[in-house]
Image (cartoon, rainbow, N blue to C red):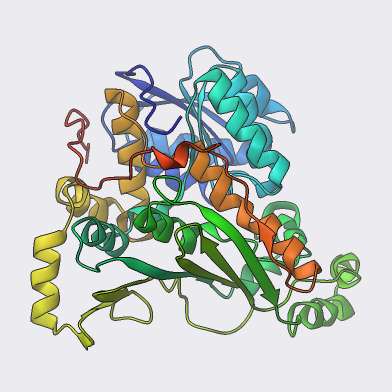
Length: 422
């Protein structure tokens, strides 16, 4: 499936499932892309479907089919013959089952991160995508952020020299949501935090993997992972339970450590460090550090910077770099993405690129092997943490094809037929 170009779909008919945290934003973005029809909306809570319908109404678009009212309503949507793409924004445990069923029903699947939570699920995604010849794209939006695309293009043009090391992270204090009874439905994300490892690796990992040509010239060999103790989550849940019986079942659980650090070594001898901390009161960071034999890039803490030959570039030199290395996709839709939004515009670039590929029969930038590999870091890190940070081999989901797969190119000619509707 790497480099696979599915038959072009002039009008991409989309069914969205999961209209809580992420789904409504996806609806709002997708209505701005030419050649998209949102034909179905699904959530087990019917009021969420009603709210998403209002987005379509605001844009003077026809109402979508309503799939709601039961835990299995999404299956009926996947079976709808008038849908080309199932866009999945549900809790993590549903990502793989929904993507699998969508592909079995003849639909392409676009699934929020992580695409899978176990190694078995990773292999199921790969095998089903290969057998059905349907795309399974993990919606890793951070690969489409402006600085990440800039550094990817710089790496392709040889600015950094040989890439030696990369760093990524998801450092984001989410206690206000994890402990909010009106936050994640059924407190699903708080429950996920009983797993001890790097639970959300793909935001920091994906852009680094693209720079390093992972699955496309190099592959991950093994990893080691270590977690700190839990210094906050158990304590805060127990304090909440003292005054609210709702939290008493959660107070009896054990939670992952504040900080997890996972280190990967690739077959070509590169290293990647990925961190995860959603509890400590730290400023938001995905790190995004690219280190080569000639220079480095570093996004966090702001301002984002690039260094060459031991010296950080000046502001004027940074402007020159951006002028020289901004890739075609940003020149094509970057200004509109900033206007339409979605985490500063990266969500929109991701959605636009997905639709452009489907409409023009182009290979995806992120394929099912990326979805499986990047997601696999989570369960592998759990095993390593549980085994005194022992190393564990990382599966080759490409089964050797990484040796000949072509790298992602941010300067490929895009379809050019997919406009933006303001």
